[in-house]
Every structure is written in structure tokens, then in C-alpha cells.
Image (cartoon, rainbow, N blue to C red; front, side, top):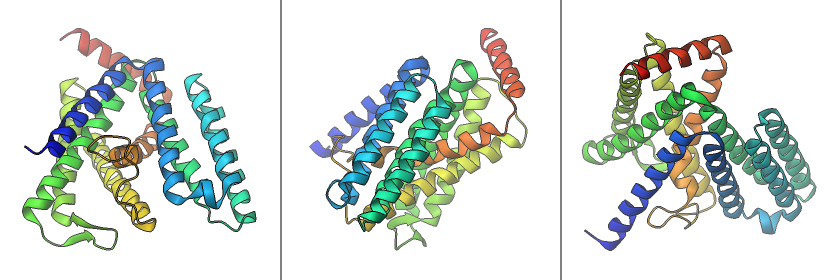
Length: 278
């Protein structure tokens, strides 16, 4: 085993254990993790796009918005967090236009801010949030793993050759199948039903995860970057590791908000009863 692969495996295991531990703990611990991920995504995105040099004022506005969003996430004020994201993105966009710069500082605020907010809101509090977050994580990790190995083993037509030449349709299909299976596995493990809505939701999250991967690849190609940063030994940057997770979180956040609060409470009560009966 090469030293680089060994480093990659060690880093991956540490990150995986950390994410699962914070997911299990919930509360301020997971909110803190979401805020850290958001701040690091903004740092990497703005750095790749050259915003600190090309649009310093827009970049400064973006940072103020992201830090304010982090504070609102930590203090459980999601409406204020969303307002900070929108106002910050608008401010960064206006400043960028006046400086004759691109709108990338505004995109950085939206991408980073919504990532942190969606992750924090999905986990939320209690058993429903824990189940929802584990559901998302299992789908994303399984999709990513099977898409990578099946794509390399089976090959075949490219999924998006101009964006990410290494991705294939075979990898995408098998990755989606693995994501659905993993989502159902989590549901069965906690004895949670859901009918056809469950596999359809899992498929939607798997597809969103792969779209997120392609989006990040497109951004890196746009700015001629191999990795989003070198913050994680053997893995590149935070964006490289959570690109699929944050897009799946966006999708899960939207799907979750379609469920009435009464139904969420009912599911949480059912989960508690079933888990206590194990």
C-alpha cells in the first residue's frame, strides 16, 4: 500500500467517524459541524474563484453573511440564517457587478450558506432528525462508493465527458441502485416503513448527490483546479468530500418540508417506540 493511499484511508476513516459521532450527538455538536463545513466551503469556493483579489468588497460581504449565518445556525434561528444568506448573496452580487467582476462571490454565499443550513435543519433535534440524517449519509456514501468502483470496473459511455471525464453511465446507474438499497437498509434497521415514497425519496437523493458531484467538478474545471483545497490530507478539500452530501441535503430539506409537522412528530414517536422495543 502506497503512503498516499494509506493517508487517504486514515483521513477517510477519521472523517467518517467524526461525522457519524456528531450526527448521533445532534444538538449543538452537529450544528457546529454544519457551521464549520459551511465556513470551509465558502473559503474554498471564494479562493478558487479568485474573489479575494478580483472582488474584495463582494468577498468581504460574503464572509460577513456566512459568519452571520453560522451564528444563527448555532443559536437555532433558521429564518434569520436564511435571511442572512439571501441578503449576503444580493449584496455580494451588487458589489460584484459594480466592480465589473463575475457573480461568483454571490454563488459562494448561496452554495456555502444553504449547505450549512440544510445540514443543520435536516438533523434538527430528536429521533426523526437522526433517522433523516443517517438516511441521507447512507445514500450518499453508498452512491459515491459504488459509482466509483462500478464505473472504473465496467466502463462504458461517459456520463458528462466535458465536465468529469471519469464518470460513466454504468457508475451512475449502479451508484443510484446502491443508494436506494442503503436508504432502505437504514429504514429497515429502524423498522420504519414508508411505502413507495421511501425508495423514490432515496432515488431522488442519490440523483441529487451525483448532480452535486458534477457541479463541483464543473466549478473546478471552470477555475482549472484539481482539488478545491488541500485541507484534508489525501482527499483535497472539504468541497471535494461533501459535494454530493450537500446537494442531497438540499433535496432532503425540500422533501422534508413537504411533510407536515404532525407527520414528522408521528414518525418520531413510532421510531422511539420501535427502537425501545428492540
